[in-house]
Length: 235
Ligand SMILES: Cc1cc2nc3c(=O)[nH]c(=O)nc-3n(C[C@H](O)[C@H](O)[C@H](O)COP(=O)(O)OP(=O)(O)OC[C@H]3O[C@@H](n4cnc5c(N)ncnc54)[C@H](O)[C@@H]3O)c2cc1C
Image (tube, protein in one colour):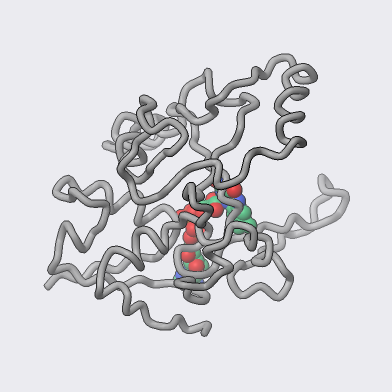
């Protein structure tokens, strides 16, 4: 029996799981049933808790007494008027994806290419990684789009609700004010045309209004053994 240990996070399951060529489903345990996986994690579990299911509860994680977010404080800087910068970071099962604001963002392809070309990581270029990101998602808005997909476990949509008037007005006025930045329907195709535009931002939310996070979609729901996630030390 092989044992793998993973420091848990948002990105590790979504990337490593999909790199296994043998895997038809995006799940390590499906690809390698003999594998035992030790998930090292800090903070509480998330499974079944409404504050990780209902998107409207996202901001509750930011309270000063939050147990699901770690707040880091920088040394004071003269460039911040003598203040510290506060950086928040997920600290619960699957980290940031369980507590963030669910905005669907993807980088420029050139950023991925730099990992391979500039930093010597063979196999981590845009052409290697974009298919893995496609495999992870069901993009309800344009499932047949060239860099999107309709089969992955993580759901992307605008949620149940129509955009508020303030959002529509922002998209209308933004390009008139900021003339170098165009209005687009798509802001996530990895290329110059879709980076740095005003666009309606999709969310990691299923079309029935449920938070689509990595913990629920890639850990809790994929394997019986992983359902026995132990309580973390913090609980
Ligand atoms: C409040 C908030 C809102 C955000 N909103 C958005 C958004 O709308 N859209 C967007 O694209 N991004 C957003 N982000 C950023 C995004 O969530 C993160 O960039 C992303 O999740 C980082 O993924 P990661 O895999 O690098 O790290 P993380 O997902 O942060 O993983 C780090 C893991 O390490 C664990 N850990 C920490 N300390 C220890 C320890 N001592 N021992 C063991 N494990 C430990 C943590 O529990 C966590 O699971 C937001 C982040 C926050 C905090």
